[in-house]
Image 1: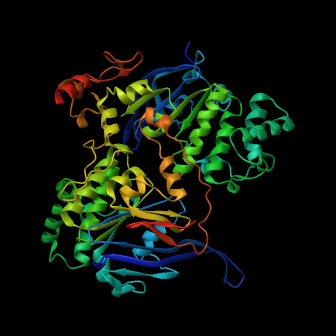
Image 2 (image 1 turned 60 degrees about the vertical axis):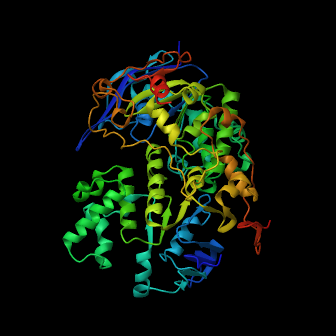
Image 3 (image 1 turned 180 degrees about the vertical axis):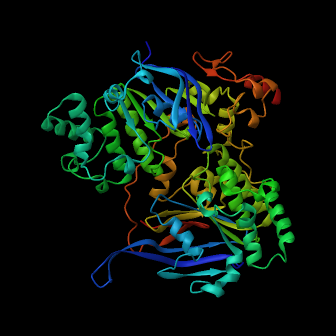
Length: 300
Length: 339
């Protein structure tokens, strides 16, 4: 690709200290994210899948700069943001937003939802006064499928799906270039999940932002994402165009993951054969190799 | 005589903010050896109706408004706490969603498995320990002689759920109730636990009520499916009939909203991805008693009558025997007209 990627991460690594000695020195550590590299193009959706403890959420937090990497570099629009803090990060924050799993715990329960959604507009000086702000918030409400008359209500007065729409309205308020969505549909009722996935698709078409979509539901990832990266024990074991990875998974763990997903059809479900995979950490020093254009697999 | 016969069960929670009408007249029966998948989302009443039968909802605020639940001919709802205690963990086994909070962290696995055997089956300690080892082996825990003396934190999430299953089946129950037993597990571990449950069902011949929100999970394990919404049964019937000859608009919408696992995602000429078929609207407000069909406000096929009068659960016209639906509309004819 000759175009500058929107986001590029190189060799991202994060160690957590799990044991300390008497003097506070680390005696044991857990490598939650291990030498992770990927790019996201403008307007693209990269799915990050894996099981609990695979490091997918930690990767998202590192990209958002909510957490500091032990090693590796992060570039946003070509600019290195790895070491930026405080004021240096402010212009980046405007373009890099987040949607969390549980909208209830990420919204201030004492703030009217319209204020929560409008807050980033005031902080970044996008609106001049209160009436401009109300208009902008009303427009955002319509964009995410909420009635603007609900602006003055509090978070507890909404259902889970509506709260996630509020969280999304807040994330898109500043027209960001990239949204990191960390399991945004996991906590929602099944009948609401499709609504939110469709909303992500609609907003991307209207506004052209890219997504880093962290999830464990492979079916939804397949539907939403242009490319997918599979994580295991902190490493990306396979990455490529979504259709290709699902149709022709190369890594044993990817195959196991796809074969384990139950199919909502009794006839097909009875024919499904689960492929076992011994969960072992990928060998130290193993590298991703390109098996087809853009399709990378970690050498066993 | 069916193993379990629930008749017109209604449960309400009286809270400071008002009454939650959690279960609104649920009736069904379960035969010995049958596996029933109870599917619904949060607030559908799928868990509460079962917990209230077992005397496991806090009273107050919970209140059983009406109904009976006959297990082997005896009404569970009329039993004293002592009588229920004799049945729970004995004739009716239970497995819950989160093994970390359901297992006691300070007691060894052995103590927790043998408790039911000593209490209900009057086994001696040595015999109970032997049985605990057999059970751990049965649920696929390697090295059971050693593992039986360990504590919950020494087990992985999947292994802990296997321990929960061992406790649930310890007294060879006639009925095993599994409330979202695989929801908290990773997908590969969930697949292993599902395989185990299919296997155990064959070996032990017990009836099972499997409560879940995931249509995929019950597709491969249930003989019959019961779909709940707003505290009512919307549809019930043989698994294949419910999936392939769907009669409730809610079940239909739910199944259509799931992404197809096999079909390729076809992108149009502008590079736009297709949309999922979505159910419009929000789940019902359980504080308000529903006059009509609780799904009616979200149902594109709803009739005037659906909004004001709750439909009874009846044999689906022209459907498989035992395929019941609660609907004033006929999903077959509206779908034919649409096609």
